Length: 228
Ligand SMILES: C[S@@+](CC[C@H](N)C(=O)[O-])C[C@H]1O[C@@H](n2cnc3c(N)ncnc32)[C@H](O)[C@@H]1O
Image (cartoon, rainbow, N blue to C red; front, side, top):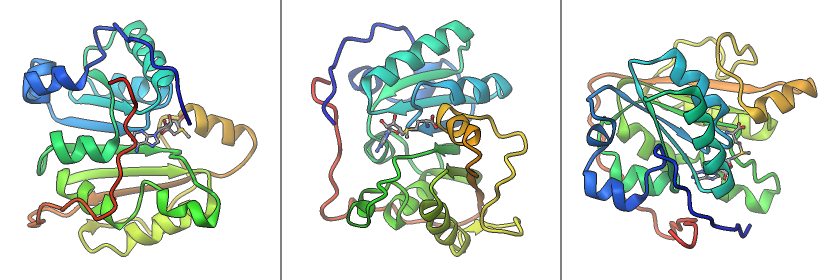
């Protein structure tokens, strides 16, 4: 989908050039607090809720959609939270280039694009390559949180995560429809309003693993917004 790119001037919006210049996220946040990442934050309603609950963590909210980035910045500013920064950047690109081994305490992926047609499924974010990259970037005991309303995506994600021995899976089922205290995003709310169940997968990385740095898979393409 093409999108109209307009300049975002919010103080919480970080360009790639600024990230490169700062060298790391600790320099941008001005402290060494643990880092969490929300991939595909949409309009930022989830990240604002989770960051308000965890002032001891820094949150990076990313999306490739310009309008969503702008709305997220406004939400962060209105919430007056100093522990969230927003970037317009592709998830795998950020993980590969700017987030190193063991750099993240948590990753959140809520209602990612489902790519429902069979021939489109290879475009889904959560696959083995992404998982290897995410596990490399997670610290010991770091959490991977994934949720979708899409049955087939929920089931395949749960299968992928629950059979990966690098996770400590204490859950009795590979996914849950019980959201407990998990904050609700715009898309989650939309599906809950239609009484569609949400598939929530929450996994923790085992401690003491040695994970080789993942290589960029052949054919790996970054959906990078023009104009950055
Ligand atoms: C269906 S929306 C869900 C938004 C939000 N998480 C929610 O639950 O309300 C998916 C979002 O992910 C973003 N997105 C898709 N692929 C992405 C990627 N590879 N990196 C970063 N963001 C991505 C899209 O631009 C879109 O805003």
